[in-house]
Figure 1 (cartoon, rainbow, N blue to C red):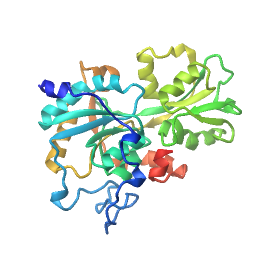
Figure 2 (cartoon, helix red, strand yellow):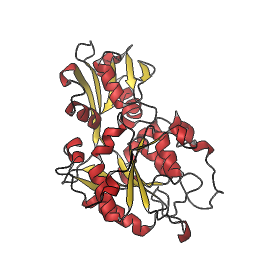
Figure 3 (cartoon, rainbow, N blue to C red):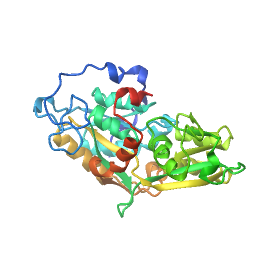
Figure 4 (cartoon, one colour):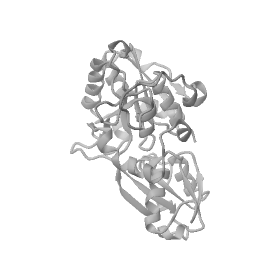
Length: 330
């Protein structure tokens, strides 16, 4: 078992203010190589759409302390405790000190990995391509079930007392999207709802709430007429009693998308990467706080960015998304 060294590390917060903005980070000279959409400091000679490990072994990172961050959430302190069983397991398998860092924005999280301050991270669905292309993140795992199933849906909710019963009723309404880079909270509805006769910003007013939690609570409080949110987030909110499911009405649900990706930094030593993957794929969710929080999840399952994020890249392309620091920080 991991020692108390791993359990008593103080919670730290990664904020945009505590890190250099992505656009201002020192950028090494242009690397002469194939790279696709990757930033100029990375190469992709094998065409798998993620950054290659540096060819020079002296550039491989092999830190004694590993920094892990989960995607930004409403209450980082709670998730520090929830993730502790996994942090202990990761520390035991890698034989390293492991620290959990809470992040307050997607931009801060991407900045941290790009600058070498973050080694392992869970990136939300929409920001994952930004992490891959701007920070050299390598997605390798998702939470799933024993039969290999994974993912979540876009769900569109309104208050149960509203006059909105179907998507067409959103005309003239005030609808909460989460943030510009969010998949289910912004990009997916912009790509999918026009097929149902409703175009965001044209047929209804878009208001950015900042998070799925705030969108859902805003619908419950009638601050917003409706909101597109990620099913996995609102299911966890309901399980924690943060809102009454009888107070809302579901008017639309999409096909399933991949959920949070788990990534390692592209320049980590291959022996360390092997241990990190071993820790993820050997972790037992049963009986842990993490297993209770992510109901229905039984294990981490292997994935790859090229195949499993194709639908997300398609949605982002439909929204004319380009993977730049400015677009991530909006």
